Image 1 (cartoon, chains in turn red, purple):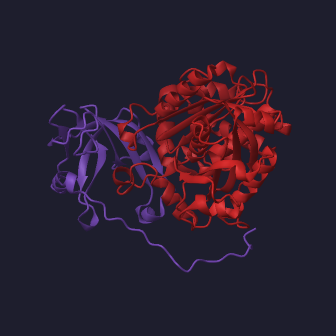
Image 2 (image 1 turned 180 degrees about the vertical axis):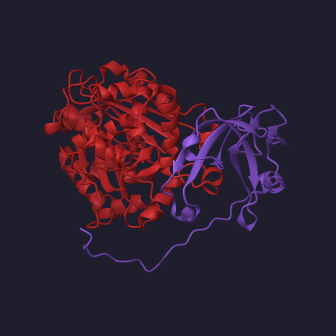
Image 3 (image 1 turned 45 degrees about the vertical axis):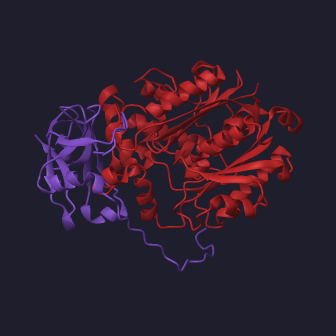
Length: 386
Length: 143
């Protein structure tokens, strides 16, 4: 089984992108990734496109994106794992190399969420669970899903609304250093705490925005990777799991079982432990999700996530810096692009190319935690220099 | 940025789904009569909620209808302030997950209680509601 490395990365500006359509938006990342890898497009045997879709006009995003970027002819498909579609695309591209099908593959994540009006986008995301039993009569929203977890976590462990807001303040702090982020302004704890309640206890500043954006990675088998670059970033562990559509069928609401299982699988495959991780991205679609991620990934003990954020343990210089790109909260969350964007960020961090928001890299190991829905899908990917 | 030119598509798409309920018809019929029932697998005895004709535990496809029970304990909740477009006329509402004595959990609206007094652990009861257009549903109310 060949080792697989990230050999090229690309990332568009995230935000409300009324200047580009779907293909044009994806092209921005694809072009950068192809140039960064120094690969001939004809050598890319498989192009996997992560996109949830439904809010833009195209039904077959993979072929539209492929045609626009001159990639028609390669094997392709669109994959969907809700907000983890990007990581699912990376995994599918990775598998096509590990299996020996192709030497070079690409994962593209792309989403355009602002071509429909905001209520329609909110409605579509709110259906991301069990439509029949949670939406039809009860109007679940995406914030409501995570709010159910936030209330349980607060009730069990004494996590507070201030702790949630601290995650948002950190996200905006690093987002201000990321020129591709949707929001590049610092915020205060008071501003976050006094923002409009969306689904109590979650407020506007606990929630990621609706975003347009794309990201791309070129992956290559070991021998090809070494020819293409002096700084291959190896995919060492790929863990994944899922959970029930209906939240009522879950055991508990203080963590995501799928994330715990995905993390265990990824750590075992990579033969590393949480203490080896130099830098991570955690899926902070809502602030409570980042806190649960600290616990689900074993960065701290169950119930101690609030302590970690209060003590600054997930900032640069702390135990494990998390979301130095601004996270979903400040960088933006174009659903299908997010997982690929995370892989781009960790690759840049491990290459030492993250500029002002560079983490201190000691072991050369980084982690991507990408969740679809409310732990309906979970993907954990571990990358390393060596 | 919003002054960028765009093509406002003329081909609007309206989606409304006709969802088959033949295999859970008993649930909806009983709910219309004010009673909550669910499925119990005849092969392995597993009780499911939401009801499903095919057992997710043993994959058996023969089941019987049993009482769901009405007494529950609140596990978690949220007050939804920003609602989906299709719920625009419902105002704000409280969504709860509560556990029945059988151990099964149910997600539904919690009605008849002030927002400030909702606490995990409080006793609740499930009640059927007629709904509009012959589409019944169920809610939690304080015990």
